[in-house]
Image 1 (cartoon, rainbow, N blue to C red):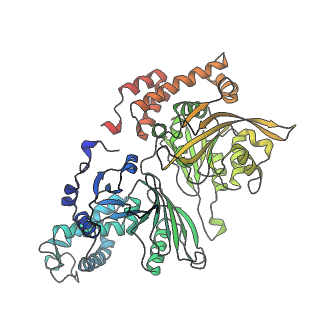
Image 2: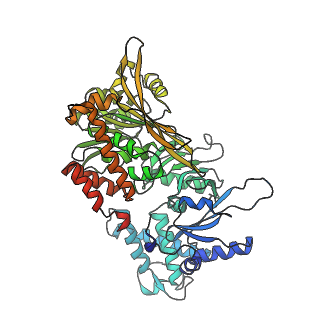
Image 3: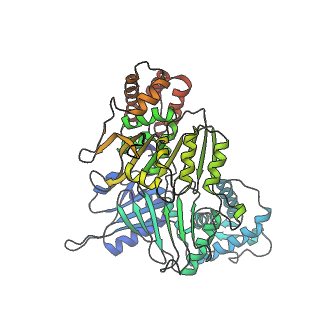
Length: 570
């Protein structure tokens, strides 16, 4: 979160926002005229916003984009839906004609334009071209309103006002480089899931306000179909009537599922986007949110440092990938890591990281599946293999990797250790139950009701896998941590009972008395708590501090915590 002095506008100062952004001013005036009330400016949104009554506020996402959240008053006991309005610069009909002319000209010049390798470079090139082909004047598309034969000549430039040029710049870059009409949605870090079905208004799961309804929708099926085709081609997973369902990742790492064909999606082409925060969430941030405790983090740290395999498991949208990414800095920073995924979601900051992604193809010989990626990873002898999500037969390969001494970290859909074992040993994964003790422990996570309302994620338990019992033909497990939903607190139930800490890790750490490992766990718990107390929540801060531990030892790491100036405080 931005420091208050870095915020572009102060909380409550709606007038300054309106003065700087005419599109916000127009929206507020129209809203006030229609509904008789004026929203308040909240600034960057936080979870305290849910306490505001009545709910009528504007918050900033990324300039020039703002969001207006409004809950209309209702009669009696009726529950009102919460409305989400994306506020972005809008073009008039005349400016829309200018936009088409500019894009036509930009596309003509594209073959001779400078090469670029990043979206930022592309944006800068487009911005420069827009400046060349417009001139600040009286506005309204002067000089004929169209760039015709001779590109770049002064008498062929389009006359615009300064405000018009900025609106044109935003809209053209939004449509050619960014996410088109979905840009306001994808710019909002508070949105988790975005649901679009046919021509209905888009609905979203909001971190603060729950399910909200947006003012964004596609008005024509052909426009929606064209947009989804373009988006699917851009992410390398083309959709068509022959292949109507695709999964992929957007540029910011968010996952998208597209259902394209009308005979499959009866209400018209649809898509769901599961958003990921641009900034990777750190383990310290999860602790501050209550997802897990410092003691849970210390336990996971020791296990990952000494090569234990773990599955981060839970139901859909329980935050599995977020937790997986958050625990990766606990792996020794000097080792090789491989990741294998269908849809990119794993984020690794280690120096030696090989990122592998499956490839779809009509040609069977050209297709690269998860099974192929895992086989390739095994040949490279990495310290850890990270699997974005185990869903099918690749699960058996993951267990083979564990058997050969390659620790694995993966996510999985199961809400308990019993259900996990049932799913792994049944179709289609079919891991022999006697192999299950190659997994060391599993971390379970759920979506729960947050204290004070809304939703939250909680690690609800950690179970160690002790071994296969041939007499009962079952797997022995032991619970290490459990979460108390009443007190919203995590309890360590494994003191002097941890099979991993005492029988697998203590000797590697050099302890003659294996129970000394619990003192080490407590020492790390205190250090992690100190990081949380100092609000060192940025992922890069956490990674760099743990890097000091791996380079210079625990004392240097603990000293660094005290003197560290975090990114959030710079």
